[in-house]
Image 1 (tube, rainbow over the protein chains, first blue to last red):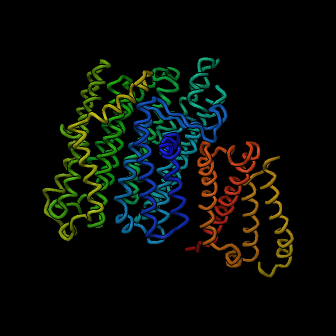
Image 2 (tube, rainbow over the protein chains, first blue to last red):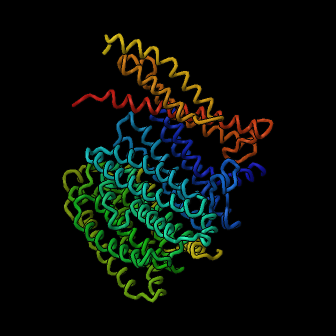
Image 3 (cartoon, rainbow over the protein chains, first blue to last red):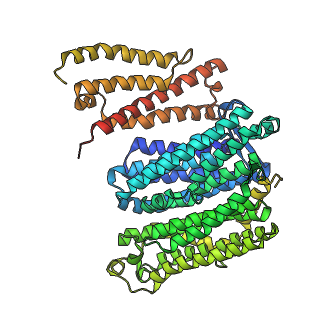
Length: 498
Length: 139
């Protein structure tokens, strides 16, 4: 019993440490066969720790962990509350499912000698994302941001297509600019308050004499993070990165990476600066609403005209991120709950969609829309998962996408912005177009040569895909669990106690 | 370049003090500027100098690519292992106090071991980057 209590005490660090140690072990052993089991085990430990943390946080409210035993003024503090425990749970759970799925996809897409490096990078990316979510230290968040970014560049560059190199380079440039902006902002905050700990920064903010440094800090930090979360119009890196990365990497990135950046933005907007503070004459919420709407419409429209399914889904991701940031900008309980619900739900359905495409890629060797013609006849289970994910993206009742959009619409009405509710519904109609185009090709077209030769995806890939698709349905019918967690997150962000 | 006696003799003279200086920077990190990162770079510079003078093949006989690729994660592992040991001894992750009989010595040991890990990873990463570029064939 005392052992379990000791484990409980170290949970926050175990969540991050397990994938990091796993990555080191994979890189050290470097045997192709051993890589996958080590990676899965590491992700399993991390997910178990995150799952346990959910209960601990529900009991205690806030869990604080001092690395090296140093006080927050001096050292790094991991701080878990209702907001980031949800992110930790999503990231670890989806990463675990992704790794379970990855084995055959990776074996087919990655050169033999590079397989261990690939798994090591997946785990490093996971550790970086979890670290960003868990840390209560602004500079430590930057370090983890860089860890996750650097590993992501490598993951993208490992794609088969030569264009993956260009995509990785493009993301490297943009990502570095984003990280630099972020660290400039953190530097200004440090200048103004003399501390890097977020909680201490908040304590000392009222004493800051000149608001100018704070305004500049907020602008730099928000734009830096916006680059990372691919907020429209800073999203140009995303479609290429998702399109050319290896399938397993795309699943991981699409369902976790941008979500953690959204969390960081929410933390700074609500936890540090206050959402209603204005940057000069510019209202943050106003800009955020405008950009979210632009993302919802422009990116959805762009998705309609894509020829490659991976790029189609990537543009859809930009649009879906728009819904999430819209929820943040509404800044009321329903809107924020909708945003966090959509973080969870989008991770599940985009994960399922990209997994299905990865399976098609394995069997047909192509993710071009035309090559998917009639794939529903030869790979029915995969196509069903893709269909469920697509319906979720539209927000059809019975899928989890409906629940989160419902909360967003409620939030819009609570804010007295009925027109926003209309815009949410109107943009979903565009989603009907691109999902409809995809489903029409998959189910109703005559199968091409590649599609006829394809057989159903292997079980090891099919089961994780169906699991995520099943959860999309399950949370669409019984949203109690995610809605409770997202509601608690919204309450904490708005300054209440869960 | 291989025949250039001035370069070869000069490099030979520089190599040993360079390595010694790396060790000095490594162990002097407690008292002044220095530490694992700087020491790792200096030591790697020695190997890179050797490779520049005697050719890549000779350098890889000295420090093979396989060794370098193992040393990179090994350094991180040492770092993390120190943290795990301090957890096992009842402290938080990377709390050096419980590593020895009193906190002062514990901190000394902790920093010493962690810096050793940093040295290995930086040293081998630098060499790996050089090898990667140097072994590229112009296409």
